[in-house]
Image (cartoon, rainbow, N blue to C red; front, side, top):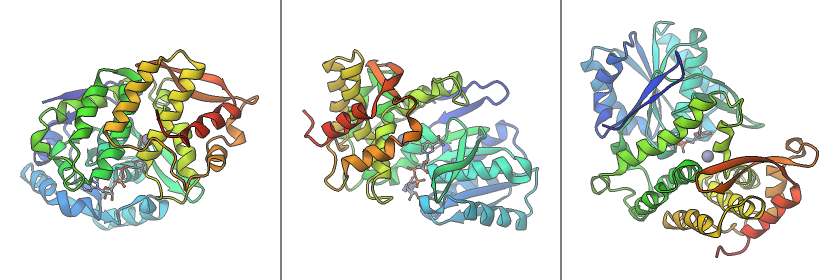
Length: 372
Ligand SMILES: NC(=O)c1ccc[n+]([C@@H]2O[C@H](COP(=O)([O-])OP(=O)(O)OC[C@H]3O[C@@H](n4cnc5c(N)ncnc54)[C@H](O)[C@@H]3O)[C@@H](O)[C@H]2O)c1
Ligand SMILES: [Zn+2]
């Protein structure tokens, strides 16, 4: 079983990546000496698919639990849902001796983690992520948050989980678009630290079936690939848990311009992963121009994004000037320059502080042309 440990002193925890692990959750949690009543927090899509399996396993291990379901989607990730769920938890008799299990994608994990961080001034929580984004990215690292009308993730806190249980079988029910979404983050991780992984990701990209998503039984290498990819996220989290040293900031590769594109159109009209793929292409353009990245390294990442069928050209409905304005608000510029993650080569990121608004405008304008 590919198993990882996240080393963060007294906040260290294991990440278990194993097919069938959802049905073993009760035992796996018991081994970590977690006691008390459990509040399972999940959403309206994930709970019908996986909560029964989880509850049966918890019951077999002697745990009692209550299930708290909110309506799926980013629009639920707010303080009003936090209050609703916390009230339900009180009604169900949860106190400081309880703990939380987050069962679902990144929205569930971010919000359930946030609730756990403040309920009775903080109780433990376990992540059981069920999307690729949440398995390789949001469930590891301890960033919890909810959104405000003014922006995403503006209210939050670092609260590390006690355990992360990843069952690749849960990806069987994920639609093709959400698989691509998560694979954009996997490409980002590979580009930052493991160039040889790009080929493995391309092979996986080709295996996405438009109607059936992933045929897990034909992908025996998937658990190891997920584990290797999570290890990259873990590396940056361990080096810079609270993003104070600049190393965790490398994980923003492709996200400065990606976020700008996302924020320039009505929410939901472009998927985050698609915006990240475009942001990656823009970061590669800038890395060629302002760092030493070779054309071959750039092509390796572009080819991988292409195999996953992520977009590489700005859709017509995105206005380049608006995208620039959204990613480069004047607040982010210090003395006319912005902090930006570039790649000197595959696996060699660098944080540069000298790019100007004109540089970003060039890169976004390049995105309006077909990719070579
Ligand atoms: N904390 C972090 O470090 C971090 C990192 C990256 C993203 N995030 C956050 O994560 C969120 C995005 O995560 P996401 O992409 O998982 O979104 P999500 O949680 O909204 O899940 C996407 C959709 O898939 C459904 N779903 C979940 N598991 C499924 C399954 N196995 N089969 C079928 N459908 C399933 C969900 O109900 C939802 O409709 C954002 O809120 C983002 O801010 C946080
Ligand atoms: Zn992202």
